[in-house]
Length: 304
Image: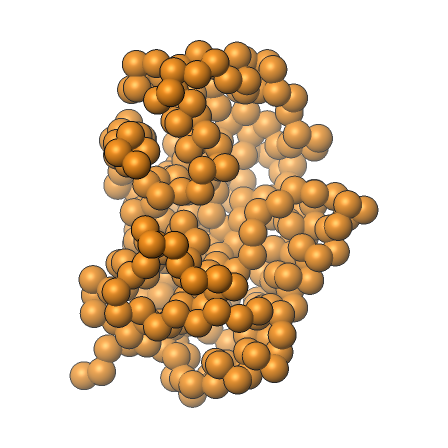
């Protein structure tokens, strides 16, 4: 039998790279699309890498006219800028891209289109957030994610398009971009720096990268997920301050200055989900204890 052909949009990013590695271990045929080539540490042998702007419909039609069995859309980048500060570009990047993909990709063999959504779609909805809640986007980025969710669910209802939306909360692990929250904290602690942070009273959910990738594969392979939006998280809320203290303890160093960084305007102080729906539909559960996941992540940055 032929191996499944997987298309990953954003395969050179943090989650995309880990997804490519997992698919390679399964001996799948893999195509990755991104704006730029992978860095040396994110290159995966056997992957067909394509680089072009997905907001250009002509280029999408030129390079993605073949049949794929599975598509995972990790396109876009997290940015909380306001609309007046350039937010329209964020909306366009996400929403034009997904329309181009759906319009151009052949559907003859397509078994599943996994859209990677965001916990930001819930905005300031009270915790624990669940999939029945009305979305409350509070930024152009989260609006673009919500628009993509509703677009794909409309296509499922009207055209039986095989889409599922996975709303990721905070995925972390080895190889995450240095500018993200945990890598910044870990590297500052490893250097025994004094560094400013918020008061840290926010509640968040941290899901280890291997568990997130596992959830994506479950979503690819379960027929009953079509049309659903599902939370992907550990199910264990942690205070930001407690997370910072865990890193300090595991590294044995670091001098955080709590309260030196202001909370983001409109920030949801309790953003953690109910994951019972995902457990039931995907028959999936997170397996990585936060202390084990943190230690693996710290070991990575300590050796790079």
